Length: 187
Image 1 (cartoon, rainbow, N blue to C red):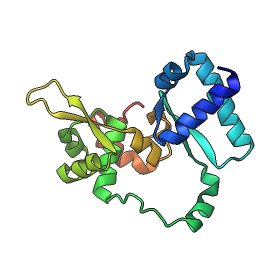
Image 2: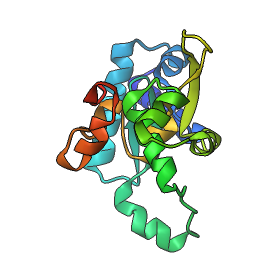
Image 3: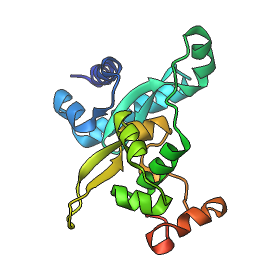
Image 4: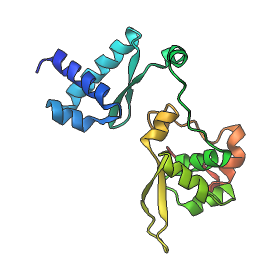
């Protein structure tokens, strides 16, 4: 398969999928090395940006997705019926913040930081796919551990958790003081 065919095949797979496609799957399907795939994706990303295409690549550490270009959001919104955005309550946002910065985290950890119960917020965040169960903590009672999902990253326009803003900003110092050890979590 020639370079142009591989480029086209990747573009087609990403378009048809609509969801993030693991890089390893693309490599297997097209018999590509990691370096070859990365080269094609870099060229594709550069082409889309340079030509101001209506789509662009969304890359995470281990997957790639074809998404609409934000530059055209107003035009698309004008022509299409507005899609109802996920609405987050204050409790859900606070809970999601704790999970994002402290993961893996238990309900008790979240409640310790927030100072209030969090069952409903956790259940709603699980339901809409912003967080997921990661397993159980190896302590008495074996509480469930939670972490964020790729849907969380996409919703907030992040490529990885490293893109989260630093927690210890002046406005967040009181929040950071409530974290175990008084320090924000690393990445």
